[in-house]
Image 1 (cartoon, rainbow, N blue to C red):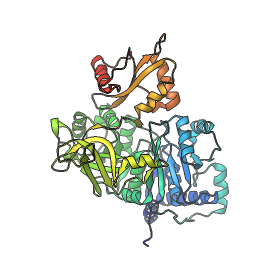
Image 2: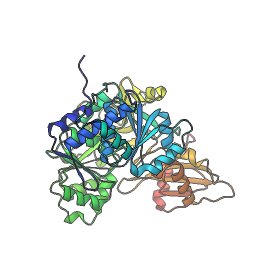
Image 3: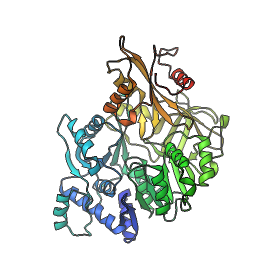
Length: 518
């Protein structure tokens, strides 16, 4: 049997090959060499192993964009344990359900996340997992642990990988209609291949600016950058002026942005006076894009745009390079690109039959990056994975040249900055509010095709709807990501011919009367 080499081992080998290379720059401007980072991963792994962490166990982590968040994840995966990355936009109640569902044995917490972590732990009904704080020390553990570990473990100590190709490297939780987010199991084998995917025009070596959460796609792009011998500059979050300044100061070559954040960059007054000559690639994706805004970006930034379409269940599916942004389909619709190597895409009808080019249907995909399945949800896994293909829930078509165009979604989901909002989940919550007799949650796209959450609410007889109070109620129970852009008080919810809420009509009504709260 051929020995398996995981993504962490590949990154560690690259670090060891050039120990003096500056591989990480913190948000405070501190540089970390490859040798220092390599040592921190092994020290962390040794410390966690001493504490009983073994292959097949689960570690959850709530932390910001700090080097310790990367070294801790690598250490966990090196030991063959799986990681669950908790999102800042989730409410503590939801985070607690995720921690419990994943059978978490250890919770790693960044100092900046101490308060939300404490609230998370307060919502756990059963036994709480052990907790360790990620600090600024060499091992990433808190000061007391660092002192004890450093005294007995010399620099240069290494830990052998215990991960196998079919082991989970992570469970990535997304929103769900049942109240508990779905846990997507991703194995080491497919992820090691995904991390090895070569970036085009990302710089040689690449220098990636991370200004969105490491718990999301920025973490994967960091892995890809380090595995290719590049370096990563960390920022605490996205602020367009700070991003522009960092590109110039740090000579950034590569940047990942969601479309709404790209638009903020284009609109910032410092754009025209910032030296962006080092920037050779902006990878964008995660939500629908505005063709007009993309044309504007190409005019202002040059041929640096690379569009990605993918899903958590199947990783990267298509890519569109700068020269392909002018390719359009029906009615001038912009393509999301062609399948990347190793990915097959088919368009199928409701019975699962393959459709010819230029015919719309549900997008099915098959790739080496497919999930193992949903954590402890075999029925749901069977619904989504059919004969080795993943049903994406997206509606689209392929043209004769193999370019994919997306038109709609089969799944009722609103894609916002930070993640996905599932209307059914939010409707269930709103129906528990005493002022709400009936409601419907739907997405409304702005001129830039940025989706926003809207709620149409029929008040309980004798009551009125306070939009601010409803929003506070949503944030308290579901987190800021679910906060509605507008709450519309209506006399009734319009229905389709089959008796379902007519959300397309609600969207049209909102667009016809503006964004005012009613």
